[in-house]
Length: 92
Image 1 (cartoon, one colour):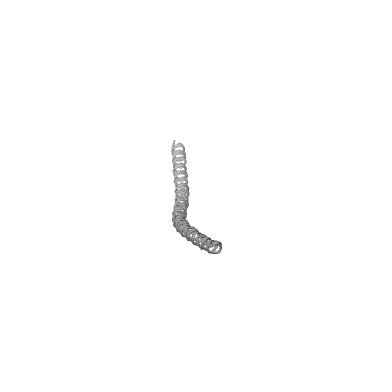
Image 2 (cartoon, helix red, strand yellow; image 1 turned 60 degrees about the vertical axis):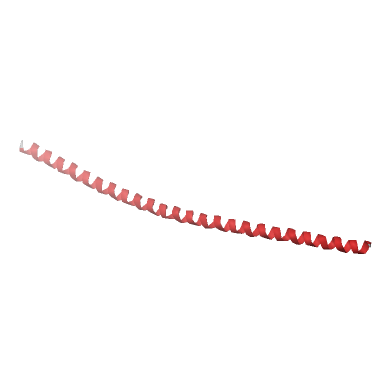
């Protein structure tokens, strides 16, 4: 009877210790995954801010391009008026 009791105690202790080590390993893996998720969150936040800056720069470039196009159109119109005036002066 004593030997059975000792054997049950040894099995119970082994099972308890095995459960603890498994929990520790699980906790370590969870910590590692949490750190990876945090790293990815930081990277995503960085990419989101970069994307926002690129969007702002693209809008500014589009505005500058529109202004350049408008300037070119007005200069072309002005040049056409001058050419028309020159042509009219030769016809007279």
